[in-house]
Image 1 (cartoon, rainbow, N blue to C red):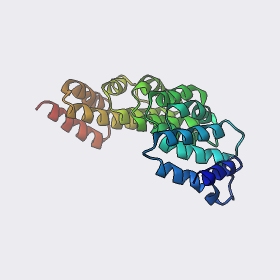
Image 2: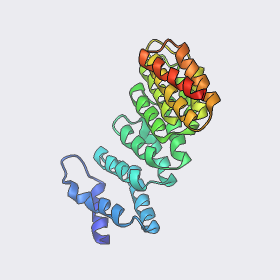
Image 3: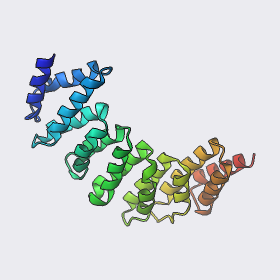
Image 4: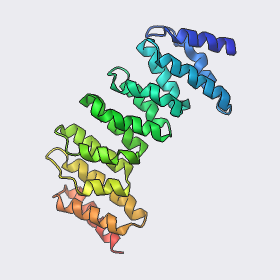
Length: 233
């Protein structure tokens, strides 16, 4: 297996679209077979990170990101972070960072927000929401006022995914624009439901009241009304 793995890593250096994916399959197989071997996993990660630091083709680096999504640790973050601004690799890098369960990965995503183009920013925002990244609440709150309604709406949805008390507070003080009112209402409802379930009726009540004060859709109004009734019980 070691010889096959060495050959696969050698092939990975020049792996590109149109090349038989079987040439790098031993890497995927090694990820599976080493799931209980921390030292072997660490060696795999080190070798994968090394490829990201080369001029390997896009397809090769994409394959590395997919692998790091499974075995990546804090050690992989510095190599993945620069790819967030790369239009061709940003989505692969953020998927990996989204799954790496260390604060450094979330911080890398947060740090990228002011540095990337709008179409990449929305994906990074979505990944922060998927991580339920507590450290992202402040930068996401700032983006609620972004001049691009799509970015502002994405920030609202991410806060709704995070569902913390801080996320709820950020949504309560937000000033909805024409293109973000529904997104903020939906996200606020998600936060309020979580707060209510956790027993924080005061914060849930304030959030439901904010939704009702924003002239929401009938569905949101009905849901917020039911939420307020639940808070009173």
